[in-house]
Amino acid sequence: MSAPAPIPFIDLRPGEDEVAVRAAIGRVLARGWFVLGPEVEAFEHEFAAASGAALAIGVGSGTDAIALALRALDIGSGDEVIVPAMTAAFTALAVIAAGATPIIVDVEPDTLTMDPHACAAAVTTRTRAIVPVHLYGQPADMDAIRNVAVRHSLAIVEDCCQAHLATEGGIAVGTRSEAAAFSFYPTKNLGAFGDGGAVITGNEALASRIRQLRNGGQPERGRHVEAGVNSRLDDLQAAVLRARLPLVPEWTTRRRALAGRYRELLPASLRIIRERDPGHVYHLFPVLAPERGALQAHLSAAGIETMVHYPAALTNQPAFAAFVSHECPVAVSAAGQLLSLPLSPRLSDEDIVRVADTVAAFAKGHRPA
Ligand SMILES: *Cc1c(COP(=O)(O)O)cnc(C)c1O
Image (tube, rainbow, N blue to C red; front, top):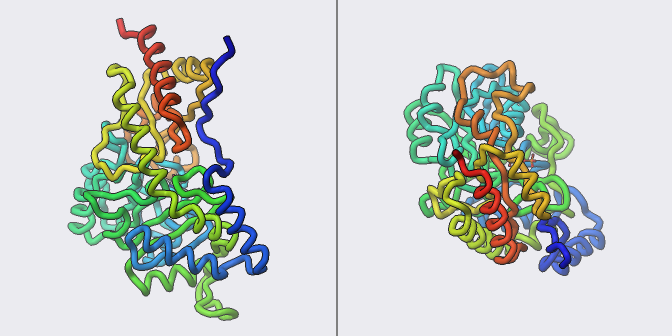
C-alpha cells in the first residue's frame, strides 16, 4: 500500500483563480504603469467596499499599514501604544517604526486575543493608542477594549492582518475604530504575489495624511512637507488582489466549514481556541498541545505539515527586551504549546478527517496518567 498524499500546510500556487490572476497581470504589463496606478486606485475602492469602510489606502505591507496609521494620528516619540503579547512580532515592530513605545500586555486564555483587563491596567498618562489584534481571524473582545479606549481617550488601530472580511458582533472589523490595518502577504486570507497592505478608515483627513506619508511625505509630486516613507502598493499586486477579492467570501465559508469539522472531530482532550464570534474567518486553526514537539513529529511522519504561530510571546523576543513592563504568563504558556493544523480552503473534508484521526491516535497514546 502506498502512503497517502502529503497534506501541505498551505499551497500558494494559484488554483481556481489562476485564469483571473494571469489576465490581471497581463493587463498591467500591457499598460506599463506599475506603482500607484489605476489598479491600485480601483483596488482601494473595491477593498474599502468589501470591508465596509469609506476609504482604503494601499501601502507596502501590513506592518507599514499599522505604522502609518499611527503616524497619521500624530502618535510617535514619547507615546505608548498597547499591543497583545501573542501576535506576529510585526504588530509591535510597527509601533516602534512609528517612533512610539509598545506596551505589551497579556492575552485571554481561551481566545489568546488581548485581555481587556490587562490593557486597562497598562494605561498611563503617556498612552495614546491600543492596537488589538484579531488573532487567527477571530475578533478581539472589542466591546471591552473600546470601553478602555473611551474611558482614557485613546485611539484604536485594529490589526486586521489575519482578519479579512471578518465581522465582530455582525459588523465589519476595523470599521468602528480610527483606522485598521490589513496585510496581503501571500499566506493571508487575501494574499498577493509579494508584500502589500492597506489601511481602512472613515476619516478623509486621516486617509490623505496616510497617502502623503506612504509617498515620501508629498501632498503632490515634488513637494515634501514631512519625512514620509516609500510604502506604495504596486499595480501588479493590486491587480492580483482585485482578481482574488471576489473569491474571498467563498474561501471564508470554506475555512469556517473546515474549522467546524475540526471542532467536531478533534479529541476532547485537546485544547482548542474558543470561537467567541462567528465572524471569525479562520486564518489559522491552532491547537494547544502540552507535548507539541511530539505531536508535530507524529503528524509530520504521517505526511501532515504543521506550523507554530507563535513560538514566543513578544515579551520573550530579544527585540523587545527593552519594552517588557508587564508579565504575560498566558501568552508565555501558550507559546510553548501552540500548533497550527493545516486549514486552507483547498483542503478536502477527507484531509481534515485524516488530520483529526492522526491527532486522535497521538492523543490516545499520550493520555495523561
Ligand atoms: C502578517 C501580520 C502582520 C504584518 O503584515 P506584513 O504584511 O507581513 O507586514 C502584522 N500583524 C499580524 C497579526 C500579522 O498576521
